[in-house]
Image (tube, rainbow, N blue to C red; front, top):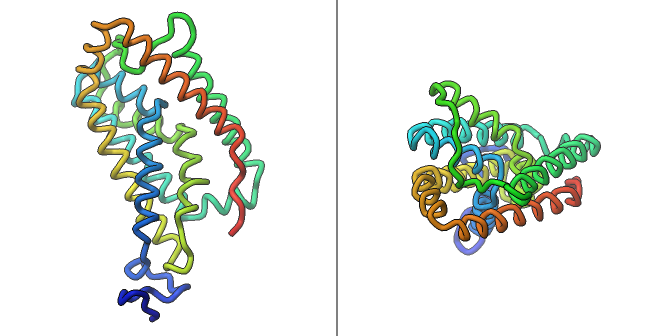
Length: 233
């Protein structure tokens, strides 16, 4: 087993989870990407804030548990070869990409149009059971094009085959992304009502927040539409 700087590294090609090593730079890169994703308005933020404001923090956290399971589903799919599928069948990636871009553009329009709504604007939602809250959180994340594209095209870019089993690295990097996303989303859920009240008392601030969020989301829609397909290593 070769060593670099006194650290023993795994021999390339050994598919052993315990010996797969990820570089610190890769972890930090995933943290930055995860923060950018979770802080950008999207389906998850809109659903979680709406549910937390209308039904309370507990409902928001139950919904978040479903969202977390959605991340795990995508992570398992990525480790099983989701990126390889998109490389082998470019039309599949293009379909997901275009559908995602259209959906994100529609969300942006709902914020930017006259009379549009902010993710933190209070709205009436019928109370739901814990099971339905969990299921809606899961479904919202599974249908979130931002997350699908992140696991299919972005996360694999931080994998270094020479550092060990690819699937093991994906699990570790994906676990990092999930930890960041769940932590930040939990903070959003816990503060959603306070932020909503603050913005409601300041209509101009609410309008600025809505326009900023809609513009960022629209920009992400354009970026998604023109993102290149994942290439084979």
